[in-house]
Length: 338
Image (cartoon, rainbow, N blue to C red):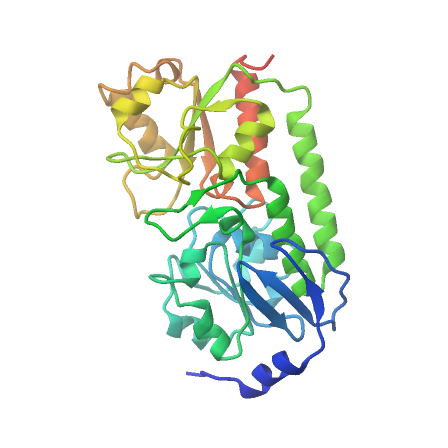
């Protein structure tokens, strides 16, 4: 099992660098440029565009695949959904080293020259390994700025936000990764495409009288979206209201009596393929809602006002734009848009 790569580590420290600052910086790079960026409190130096990277979460993987970088990925891990449409062929080219978190040793087996993740917890305590463990071996790491900008991950659960996440932070991640891999123009093109889709999805949409609830997983003690993560981006883009806007926790767990009492107009339901929680698929969630005596009398359940989203659309990823499109289409279908 390869551990250290002294030559690479020395090159990282000695190479001249192009400075990116903040959570989502921009840079003018080419295929040979070195990059330095500040990422979630870490200074990251990449001497040359990675050729053998590992992406530890689906959201980050889909950004890299969308940038046409499948041939530079040595492995991926931690999937909740089928890959985004249009990326199936590219995803099939990349080894999946684990469906959930792989071990530190399994990642090192791929001989990575760069490791990226969507969540602080993936490269933290209880995850794959701390960022410092990789960096000591000369392997630079990157974490999605969406999981650290304005967010406190020090407590239990999925963290809490002191300010609402914006879609521009997701665009910043795209630009960061495009700069690291030396494909800046591809990053700019991808961001421009996502901006256009957001504009089209929200044009003429006024859902200011509509209340939403986002259910990610678990039927026993359900995870519902708080105010300020990716579902908040969707909600604000459409001018609607989240019935759990009063909590800054990312995914607070609650009880069904509280949910029924808030009685949202529309239920946005995560359709997951993983098996780590109860009621992961949308079909199982809907069956629960329509049979449980507490929830079956809710207005949205009685009128079957459901919008189904992938788990990735409910996380801060490029598929959050897909979430805006699908929720907007659902509100129009239900006749709830002014």
